Amino acid sequence: MPHAFANVSDTGRLMIVYQPAGTIEEFFLKGSRLANPSSADLQAHYRAHGLEIVGPPLKLDVQT
Image (cartoon, rainbow, N blue to C red; front, side, top):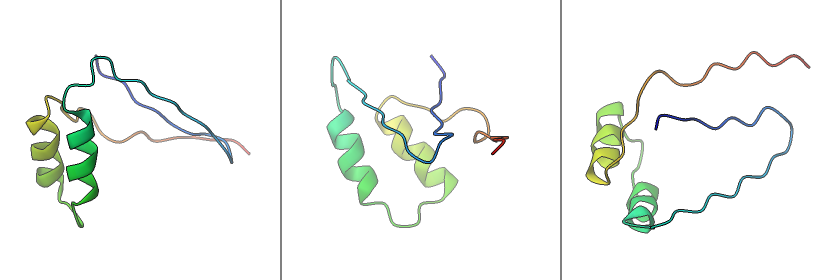
C-alpha cells in the first residue's frame, strides 16, 4: 500500500510498529550505513527488503 509521512509542525512524534518484523531491522541497519546514496542505491536497498519507492517526494505547502 503506497503511503507517506510528513511532519508539518515544528515538533512531531511518530511511532511505527512492524508486525511481522521480517527484515526491517536489517533494512534500517544497512540503510544507516549508506553514505550519500544515489537514487539507484536507495531503490536497490528498498527492493532488497521487499519495499519500493514510488512517486516523487512529497511537496508540502505549509502556511505559517
